[in-house]
Image (cartoon, rainbow, N blue to C red; front, top):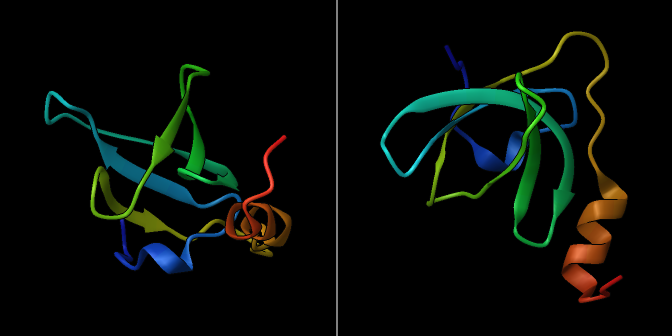
Length: 82
């Protein structure tokens, strides 16, 4: 299971646990930061958005170098839309 519960410390490649509207617990890998939260790739290939205070449960740091998504945060905070 997860070892950290601080949403601000998620980095690309971390395993993130979230809950579904049916209160089931699932996990996936963080791939990018978007305006709605962290986008994660689940084991069945579906992407989900994880938000702090909504469906985020915790995360476990990935192996090796952990890189923050600076470009995704810049776009989210500046209000630039594609």
